[in-house]
Length: 259
Image (tube, one colour):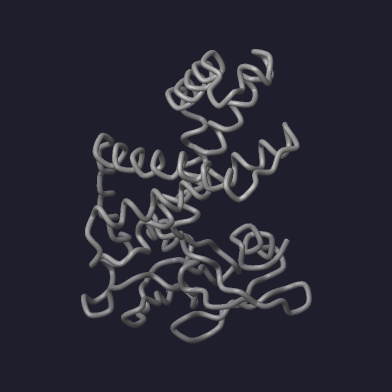
């Protein structure tokens, strides 16, 4: 059973891309660029296509190339060695984005014109697109402000009830009579608190109740397995948490089990 994936750079890039395509400014910019290219008709498209199909052609290319760049930049950039100079890292990102843009152009041209370039023509295409992609990468890095650092999340209020030595990332909560056993990465402690009240004090910690006696933090789950109509979660710091039938849909929604 695969672990639940943490928030990866790819997922973050996809969320950014969805926000961009939902942003009126981005949509207006892409639409404006598509209209300009349709009017100008570069690369002989003014002779090959009427205005309406030419507009659609360039809109597809603009959206496709923008999407490729918006995904590749945030994913590839952080993975490049930090020892590389800033210029080298941006050039590498720009070249990869340029290759992706070439692929978009080739796919659209093959679909629209049934045209596939000869090696010499392919080299000409790459020579035209790759430098542009590198220059655009530098321009965007210079002109766009760096994203503001996210504020540090506040610790869950529940941790204030624990000894200082046992305060750490929350792993799980377990009801024991009138007490709740609070498990953190630094240890565990019994607190005189009902499970329902303890769950109200987990703050922004991602997790959910998975049993009438158990709450678990998603980041603490190492693996999950089905046992009949129920399930069991194995924690990264040891131990298992049972999941009752009622809460199986919850862990499916969290990506811990296939739907």
